[in-house]
Image (cartoon, rainbow, N blue to C red; front, side):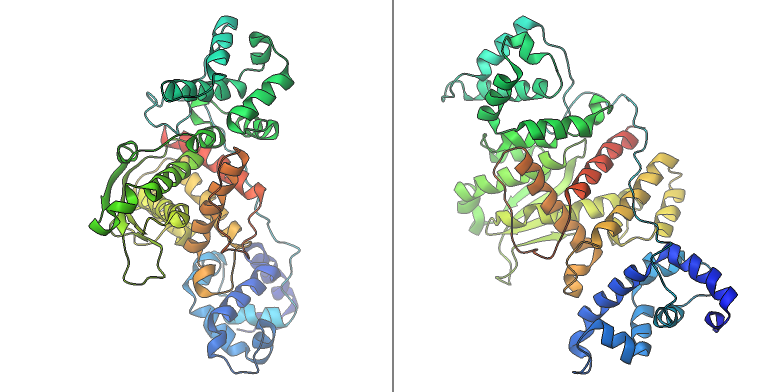
Length: 438
C-alpha cells in the first residue's frame, strides 16, 4: 500500500490513525514486543530503537501476529491499514502525539435506587441522623477501653462513630467537643486521619448512600478484629483446606490470611458479591508458586497460607467476573476483550446502555493503567497481570489511607500507578453499584 507516498491522502489517514494510536503508544508497544522477543533477536539488536531501525520487517511481523495489539488498536483503525503501514509511517516521521486523545474518566450520573436490605459487611450502611443524646452515648461507648467482655460492642461503636464522623458535619457539636478534639479522638481509635476523612467525603460527594464507596471506613476495622474461619465462609462459595494446610490455616498464619482476604473485600467495597469464589489452601508442585487463580473453577489456591498474593489473585477473579457477566462461557478476562467484543456480547444480552457503557469505560481504564505498568517481560506486561497488580496496589493504598496495617509487596517496582488511578477505580466501583441496581 502506497498511501503514505501521497501527501494529501497520508495527512488524512495519519490524522485518523493518531486518534487511535499515538507515536508514544506505538513506541511503547514496540518496546513491549522487544522485551518479549529480545532473547531471540540478533546480539547486536540491543534496544527496541535499533530493532525497528535495523529490522523493521520483523517488527511488522511481530505486530501483525500480536493479538493484543490488533484487538486494542488495529480493530479500531478504519480503512485498509496494516501494521506494516504503521511501521512505515513511524519510520517516516509521520506518527505524532498531537491528535492523541488522552484518557479522561467522565463520571456517569448515579441516582438513588432500591438495592434491598444491606447484606454484605463491606456494603455502604444506611446513614441516619443522630440526636445530641445519641451522639454523646455513642461517643462514650466508643471511647471505652477494650477488654474481653466489651470488645465486640466497643468496636461496633467505633465503626459507627467513624461512619457518622464522615457524614455528620455537626457531630462534634452534638457531642460537645471541638472538631480538633474529635479528629484527635477518631485518630486514636482507628488511625483514620483528617486527610483521609476529606478524601472519603470528596469521593462520595453527591453519591447516593447505597452506591457510596466505604473502602477506607471498612479497612479501618479489619486489623482490629479477628476473622474466624466461619466469618469468612459465609461470604465465599467455600474454603477447602488440605490436610497439609490445616495447621497453618487454623493457626496464626491462617488468621493473617483471613484478615487479608477480608481486607481486600472491604477495600474494593460496593455491592460486589464473592459467593461464586472458592479458596483452596494447599501446596503447589512448584515451590516458587505462591498463589493462582483457576478461571475454569473460579477458585484461588493459596500456597502455605501465603498472605502476600491474595489481593493479586482476587484481581484476576474480578477480571473474569466482569467478562462472564457479558458472556458466561468466555475464557478470558475483561482486560483482554476488545471494545468490539464488549459491544457484541452486550447486544446479545440486550444489555441496557448504562451497563454496556460501564464495561467499555472499565476496559479503557484497564488499558490506561497498562501505560504505567511494568513491561519488562511478556508475563508482566499482559493486560490481566497488570490489572491484578493494580488491585493489589489499590488494596494497599486504601488500607494505608485508613491507617491500617498494609500488606504491601515490593515486587512490582516498575509499576507506577497513581492516586488518580485509584480514585478513578473508586468512581468505576460506584458506577458499577448503580448500573447493577437498574
